[in-house]
Amino acid sequence: MRLALNWKPEPEFGGFYDASLNGIYKKEGMEIEILPGGVGTPVIQMVEAGKVEMGISNSDEVILGRSQGAEVVSIYAVYQTSPMALLTHSERGFKELKDVFENPGTIAAERGLPYIRFCEKKYGFKNVKVVPFLGGITQFLSDKKMTQQGFITAEPILAKKQGANPKTFLIADSGYNPYLTVVIVRKDFAVKNPELVKKFVKATQEGWRNYLKNPALANKTMVSLNPTMDPETFQEGAKAQIPLIETAETKKFGLGYQSKERWKELASQLLELKVIKTTFPAETYYQ
Image (cartoon, rainbow, N blue to C red; front, side, top):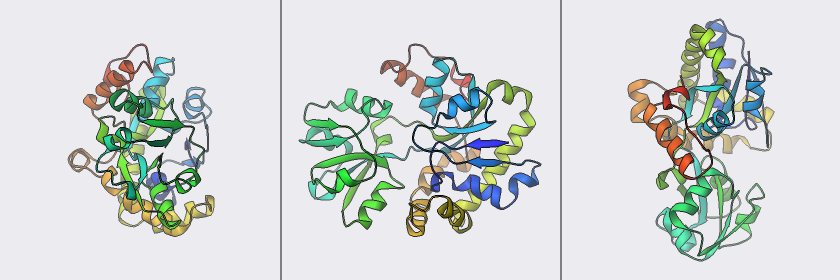
C-alpha cells in the first residue's frame, strides 16, 4: 500500500518511517510505501481517485474535502495539539497570542488558511498589515516587527540557528485546534478492510512510540530524503513535538486518538467561518 505525505520528510512523519524501517508494518502483514510530498500535493484527491490507498492530511482539510464531495475518512491523528504557530521577535515583548494582533506590525501569512481566518475573526487585523507568506524565514529575519506563520517544530528552530530570538505562540491557544497529520483513506476502503485498518493503526502507534523515544534511525533516513533540513534540526524538531503528540487523552486511549467532540467543534468553526456551507455528523469524518 502507498502512503502519500503532504510535505517533505520531516519529524511530523517520523513514526511512519520508524514503523516502516523497523519492519513493524511488515510484522502486521503490510507493505507500506511512503511517498514524500511537497507544496500543493493534492493528497485528498489522490486518495479519492485511488492513486494511493492512504494519505496525510489535516482535519480541517478533511472536513472541507467532505463538503466538496470527497468520500474520505481519518483513521489516525498524529498531532493532538496543532503545531501551527505564529513566530514573533522576543524583543517585542508579547506575552500572549492576542498581543500579536493588538500591536502595530506585519504578519506574513496565507490569508485564506482557516486558522488565519479564525484569528482575523477573533482578534481583528485593524492594527496589523497582512502580507503573503513566501515560505522559509527570510521575511521574519529581515524585519524586527515581522510575525510569520510556521510550525513550532520547524521555523522557530531554524530562526534560532540564524541568530534570531523568536517567541512562538501556538494557534491552538486561540481556540482553533484541528488534528494535524491525520491519515486518511477512502470511506469504502475503511468499510471493506476494517481489520487492515486496525493493523495499520496498531503498527503506526508502535512506530510513533519508538520514534518519540528514539528518533535516530528514522531521522537518518529522512535527512537523506530531505537534506535541506540538517540532522540537528531534525533532532530538535522531534523533541519539540512530543507534548503535541502525547497528551492525557492519548495516554488513556492510545496514540492517534480522535474524539467526536473535537471533530464536531471544528466543523462548527469552519461553518461559522464560511469555509464550508454544510456539515456532516461528526462521527462520519473519522473512524
